[in-house]
Image (cartoon, rainbow, N blue to C red; front, side, top):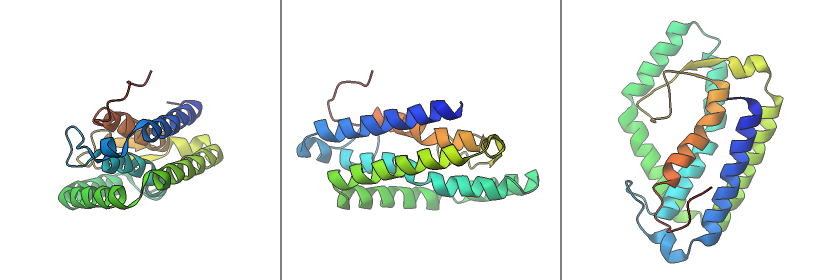
Length: 175
Protein backbone atom coordinates (compact mmCIF):
# COMPACT_ATOMS: atom_id res chain seq x y z
CA UNK A 1 0.00 0.00 0.00
CA UNK A 2 1.26 3.48 -0.76
CA UNK A 3 0.82 6.84 0.93
CA UNK A 4 -1.98 8.01 -1.41
CA UNK A 5 -3.95 4.80 -0.89
CA UNK A 6 -3.72 5.29 2.87
CA UNK A 7 -4.98 8.87 2.52
CA UNK A 8 -7.93 7.64 0.43
CA UNK A 9 -8.76 4.89 2.93
CA UNK A 10 -8.67 7.37 5.80
CA UNK A 11 -11.14 9.63 4.01
CA UNK A 12 -13.40 6.73 3.07
CA UNK A 13 -13.52 5.60 6.70
CA UNK A 14 -14.20 9.16 7.88
CA UNK A 15 -17.09 9.52 5.45
CA UNK A 16 -18.49 6.10 6.40
CA UNK A 17 -18.23 6.91 10.11
CA UNK A 18 -20.22 10.10 9.55
CA UNK A 19 -22.83 8.21 7.51
CA UNK A 20 -23.19 5.47 10.11
CA UNK A 21 -23.83 7.98 12.86
CA UNK A 22 -26.12 10.14 10.71
CA UNK A 23 -28.34 7.23 9.68
CA UNK A 24 -28.49 5.35 13.00
CA UNK A 25 -31.34 5.89 15.39
CA UNK A 26 -30.68 6.06 19.14
CA UNK A 27 -32.37 2.65 19.48
CA UNK A 28 -30.14 1.18 16.76
CA UNK A 29 -27.04 2.51 18.50
CA UNK A 30 -28.11 0.72 21.71
CA UNK A 31 -28.70 -2.58 19.86
CA UNK A 32 -26.19 -5.40 20.41
CA UNK A 33 -23.62 -5.77 17.64
CA UNK A 34 -23.01 -9.07 15.87
CA UNK A 35 -20.14 -11.14 17.25
CA UNK A 36 -18.98 -8.77 20.00
CA UNK A 37 -20.06 -8.00 23.55
CA UNK A 38 -20.56 -4.33 22.66
CA UNK A 39 -23.61 -2.50 21.47
CA UNK A 40 -23.36 -0.59 18.18
CA UNK A 41 -22.40 2.70 19.87
CA UNK A 42 -19.59 1.00 21.77
CA UNK A 43 -18.43 -0.82 18.65
CA UNK A 44 -18.33 2.48 16.75
CA UNK A 45 -16.09 3.84 19.50
CA UNK A 46 -13.90 0.73 19.20
CA UNK A 47 -13.62 1.42 15.46
CA UNK A 48 -12.50 4.97 16.32
CA UNK A 49 -10.05 3.59 18.87
CA UNK A 50 -8.25 1.76 16.06
CA UNK A 51 -7.28 5.17 14.66
CA UNK A 52 -6.51 6.69 18.04
CA UNK A 53 -3.81 4.10 18.79
CA UNK A 54 -1.90 4.68 15.56
CA UNK A 55 0.21 7.48 17.00
CA UNK A 56 1.44 5.16 19.78
CA UNK A 57 1.96 2.24 17.39
CA UNK A 58 3.89 4.47 14.99
CA UNK A 59 6.09 5.84 17.75
CA UNK A 60 6.74 2.30 18.94
CA UNK A 61 7.78 1.28 15.41
CA UNK A 62 10.06 4.30 15.13
CA UNK A 63 11.90 3.34 18.32
CA UNK A 64 11.87 -0.47 18.21
CA UNK A 65 12.49 -0.46 14.44
CA UNK A 66 15.91 1.09 15.07
CA UNK A 67 16.92 -1.66 17.49
CA UNK A 68 18.43 -5.04 16.52
CA UNK A 69 15.74 -7.39 15.09
CA UNK A 70 16.06 -9.77 18.04
CA UNK A 71 14.93 -7.01 20.41
CA UNK A 72 11.82 -6.41 18.30
CA UNK A 73 10.99 -10.11 18.17
CA UNK A 74 11.40 -10.39 21.96
CA UNK A 75 9.21 -7.31 22.44
CA UNK A 76 6.48 -8.82 20.24
CA UNK A 77 6.65 -12.10 22.22
CA UNK A 78 6.34 -10.14 25.47
CA UNK A 79 3.31 -8.25 24.14
CA UNK A 80 1.75 -11.49 22.91
CA UNK A 81 2.18 -12.91 26.43
CA UNK A 82 0.13 -9.97 27.72
CA UNK A 83 -2.77 -10.54 25.33
CA UNK A 84 -5.28 -11.25 28.12
CA UNK A 85 -4.51 -7.89 29.76
CA UNK A 86 -4.70 -6.16 26.38
CA UNK A 87 -8.07 -7.79 25.66
CA UNK A 88 -9.48 -6.63 28.99
CA UNK A 89 -8.24 -3.05 28.50
CA UNK A 90 -9.50 -3.06 24.91
CA UNK A 91 -12.95 -4.26 25.94
CA UNK A 92 -13.34 -1.96 28.94
CA UNK A 93 -11.95 1.06 27.10
CA UNK A 94 -14.32 0.60 24.17
CA UNK A 95 -17.26 -0.10 26.48
CA UNK A 96 -16.55 3.01 28.56
CA UNK A 97 -15.77 5.26 25.60
CA UNK A 98 -18.82 4.11 23.69
CA UNK A 99 -21.02 4.47 26.75
CA UNK A 100 -19.90 7.99 27.63
CA UNK A 101 -18.86 9.69 24.39
CA UNK A 102 -22.00 10.39 22.42
CA UNK A 103 -22.58 10.57 18.70
CA UNK A 104 -21.32 14.17 18.32
CA UNK A 105 -18.25 13.57 20.47
CA UNK A 106 -17.29 10.49 18.49
CA UNK A 107 -17.65 12.31 15.18
CA UNK A 108 -15.57 15.29 16.35
CA UNK A 109 -12.86 13.00 17.72
CA UNK A 110 -12.87 10.87 14.56
CA UNK A 111 -12.44 13.98 12.40
CA UNK A 112 -9.59 15.24 14.57
CA UNK A 113 -7.68 11.97 14.56
CA UNK A 114 -8.08 11.50 10.80
CA UNK A 115 -6.85 15.07 10.15
CA UNK A 116 -3.86 14.44 12.44
CA UNK A 117 -3.06 11.16 10.66
CA UNK A 118 -3.18 12.91 7.27
CA UNK A 119 -0.76 15.59 8.49
CA UNK A 120 1.58 13.07 10.07
CA UNK A 121 1.52 10.77 7.03
CA UNK A 122 2.44 13.73 4.80
CA UNK A 123 5.48 14.46 6.99
CA UNK A 124 6.79 10.88 6.88
CA UNK A 125 9.75 10.19 4.61
CA UNK A 126 9.89 7.10 2.42
CA UNK A 127 12.56 5.76 4.78
CA UNK A 128 10.20 6.31 7.75
CA UNK A 129 7.38 4.46 6.00
CA UNK A 130 9.67 1.53 5.21
CA UNK A 131 10.84 1.18 8.83
CA UNK A 132 8.96 -1.38 10.88
CA UNK A 133 8.98 -3.83 13.71
CA UNK A 134 7.68 -7.19 14.84
CA UNK A 135 4.12 -7.06 16.17
CA UNK A 136 2.04 -9.09 18.64
CA UNK A 137 -0.11 -11.09 16.21
CA UNK A 138 -2.42 -12.32 18.98
CA UNK A 139 -3.67 -8.77 19.64
CA UNK A 140 -5.52 -8.31 16.36
CA UNK A 141 -6.12 -10.44 13.25
CA UNK A 142 -4.77 -7.61 11.09
CA UNK A 143 -1.43 -7.43 12.88
CA UNK A 144 1.20 -9.34 10.94
CA UNK A 145 4.48 -10.67 12.35
CA UNK A 146 6.35 -7.69 10.88
CA UNK A 147 4.72 -4.37 10.02
CA UNK A 148 6.21 -1.33 8.35
CA UNK A 149 5.02 2.14 9.26
CA UNK A 150 2.88 2.26 6.11
CA UNK A 151 1.31 -1.06 7.23
CA UNK A 152 0.57 0.55 10.59
CA UNK A 153 -1.14 3.50 8.89
CA UNK A 154 -3.24 1.03 6.86
CA UNK A 155 -4.16 -1.14 9.86
CA UNK A 156 -6.99 0.94 11.38
CA UNK A 157 -8.99 0.96 8.16
CA UNK A 158 -8.71 -2.83 7.89
CA UNK A 159 -9.88 -2.97 11.52
CA UNK A 160 -12.67 -0.46 10.74
CA UNK A 161 -13.91 -2.45 7.73
CA UNK A 162 -13.89 -5.68 9.75
CA UNK A 163 -15.99 -4.21 12.53
CA UNK A 164 -18.26 -2.36 10.10
CA UNK A 165 -19.59 -5.79 9.12
CA UNK A 166 -20.44 -6.51 12.78
CA UNK A 167 -22.67 -3.47 13.24
CA UNK A 168 -26.37 -4.25 13.37
CA UNK A 169 -27.57 -0.84 12.26
CA UNK A 170 -29.59 -2.16 9.31
CA UNK A 171 -27.97 0.30 6.93
CA UNK A 172 -27.14 -0.23 3.29
CA UNK A 173 -23.73 -1.81 2.75
CA UNK A 174 -20.98 0.62 1.69
CA UNK A 175 -20.23 0.69 -2.02
